[in-house]
Amino acid sequence: MGERDAREWRDQQRQAVRAHADADARRRAAEHAEAAELVAWFVAEATRRGLPTTRLAARGYDGRGRYRTGLTGWYVDRAETRAVDVAGRFHLLTVPGGLRARLFGVDPQPSPAPLVVGAGGRDGESIPLRTLLNRLLNDGTGEPGSTTRPAAPRG
Image (tube, rainbow, N blue to C red; front, side, top):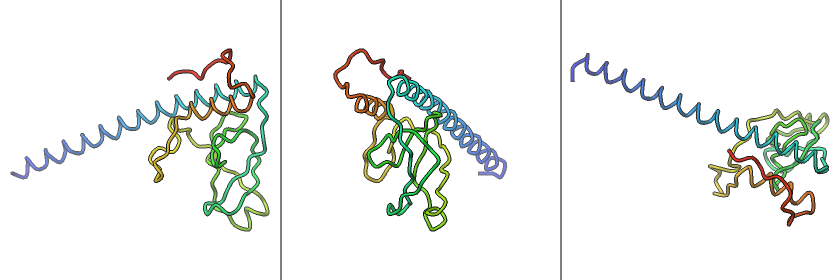
């Protein structure tokens, strides 16, 4: 293979890698937009139903400490490590702990909501965000058999 052929091959490889990265970024942006729509629907529906909110607390990365936040909303998983606040933002509630966090609390920043919670995790357990939010609405209202509730929007 001549030097010119090698250069052309490297350029083609770079272009292919760039195209794959661009396609992946577009896919992730579309997933985040769909998940954001689900979260907004959930907040509107939870507010309409009067689903009680709670003060959200974060957990330390080591799982031992709980830290105050200024957030109010709903935990969406049993481990209370993911939540939606009343402003419709999704939060991962795991933070670096420490004395400062214990004294002053923490301010977890919102993150893009995933369409599938737990995907790629080591335990292999994942669940669609739509399922988690619907379950929270049904459990929170005490109306598991009602068929008059609007379903989560389909993506």
